[in-house]
Image 1: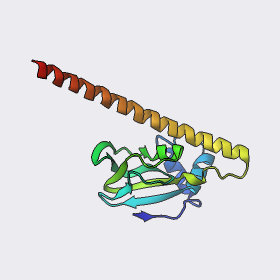
Image 2: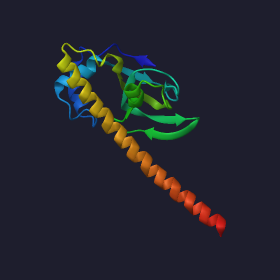
Image 3: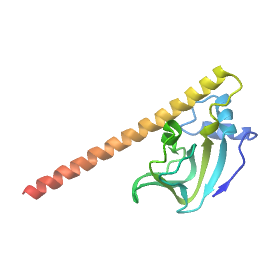
Image 4: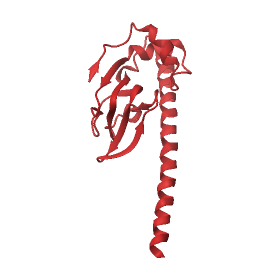
Length: 168
């Protein structure tokens, strides 16, 4: 992994980040705050970005490349769309990573250090920023849940078909 310093002085990235689906609805002020908490991380093909069971506070937004989500040595999902997000569950509940994430090809991510998200100049500003960030995480989790539900329905239909075929 290669990593940049924190992006506090990289205001030129605001416009690029506002084009990402997750961050597009945020004001420049909040994107600048996120940049202060962020680094650019570059990974090589097959490099583990986050190992299952690890504890950390990083949330990732895919900028290029792709990732495989692996649970118990089985691929359960892929994220290959620019702006795709992963790592939000551990940031919200503070528990260990529920799956490993592995780079597909050369992969670049915006890594947001959520351990600092409660730091702001004044309590009201802090509360506003945290609520905006949690709203974004909720949107990501809702989309992941919708995708998981669709997969569950597909798998149950296949299982029902297999059971019918066995009885015949």
